[in-house]
Every structure is written in C-alpha cells, then in structure tokens.
Image (tube, rainbow, N blue to C red; front, side):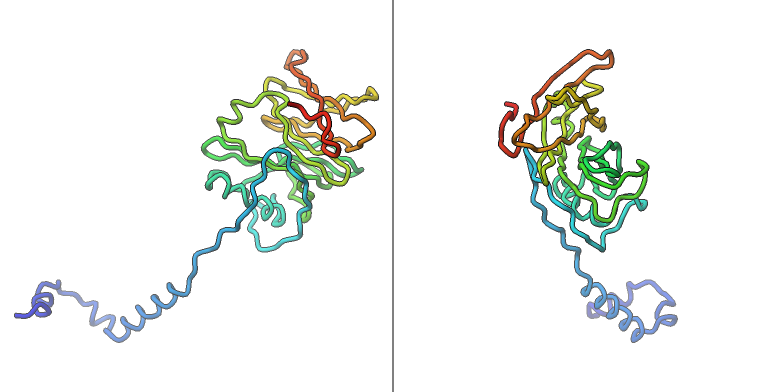
Length: 245
C-alpha cells in the first residue's frame, strides 16, 4: 500500500467533496492566493526628530490622513505622524486633543496646545497657531505648527520649572516650559506689562515678539499660594542672547 492510499484511508469521511467539487475548490484557493500576494504592507513615513530649540514650520495642506472623532485635521495629523515613530507606537497622533489655548499674536488667533498620552506615560505635545474658537472644535485645515516634543515619564519627572524648548518664525518666539512646582506662570516684560502663560498639563506655553532691539521678557512661576517658585530670562533666538544655561 503506497503513502497516498494510506492517507486516503486515514482521512475522515466527509461530504465536503460532494458539496464543493475539487475544480471549484481549487479555483477559489487560486483567487485567495492571488489577492493575498497583491496586498502590500503599508509603508511607514520617516520623520526628522527635532530636539532642543525647534525651528518653526508651516504645515502644508495634506490629504489622506484619517482623523480621530473629527477633531485633529489631516494636515496636522500628517505633520505629527512622527509621534508614533518616535515613541515606538506608544503615542498615536490621531488621539491628539487640544488641551489648552490662549490669545495669539494676531487678532482672532490663538496659541493652542495639542497633546496625546501613551500607556507608558510618554506625552507628546505640539503648539499650534489657529483661528480662535471653542476648545473642543476641530482643527483648522492649515494650522501653523511651531514646536513639538515627546518627553518620557522619566524625563517629565526630572523636569523643573524653566526647562525650555521652542523656536522662532516670522518674528515670533513660541516656547514651552516645564511647569515643575508652578501652577501659574506669567511673562514679565521690560516695559512693566504682564501676560499670562498658557497652563497646559505639565507645561506652560507662550509666545513673545522676537526683536533684537528689545530684551525678551522673563518667565515667572508661582505655586498655589502665589509664592514665586522660579524665574528665568527667556532667550532671544534671533541674536542667541540671554539663553539660560
């Protein structure tokens, strides 16, 4: 008895062959294999990861990016797509939400903070200039993204008030400072004027004019009792002066 005959005898009795003839079954398998081989795995987009003082950029118009619950726009999600790559998938940019906003440099504009958190505690955030509106509104189709970072839980724990990151574009400095022990922060300008910084989770976000003829303001942080917990002279990225050590 050859091997084929042995296998036939060991095969359980079934009515499959009667209900699905061999020619039809083979043709179906061929179609499945052809469809599978034609499917290619999606390509991951590469992104340049920025660190330290981040240069501001303008988000270009983009299409083809799915959005989460209609809040984050395709162009913004496209520009923040490096969040997933940079965090090995811990943070998904499509989960980003606008968590805070404050008045921008132009009438009718705001500086807003978009943020998403990963299961491992990593937080990715980005500051964006947008048209004014409710906090939970969908993103503009072409917002102006300025700076972004993805500190890990360990890095967040080590941050203190005045740890800065940011960039400059079009005569505007856009900065983010770790909150540390501060619950409120303000910009104190040399002319005596004061502007509140935007409290955004574990950070403060703010902007100021980049003028080489005028010294930048100071960022001052306060605790819940109103006591000053820190003060830092902000950098002028145009002249590279007054950069904190």
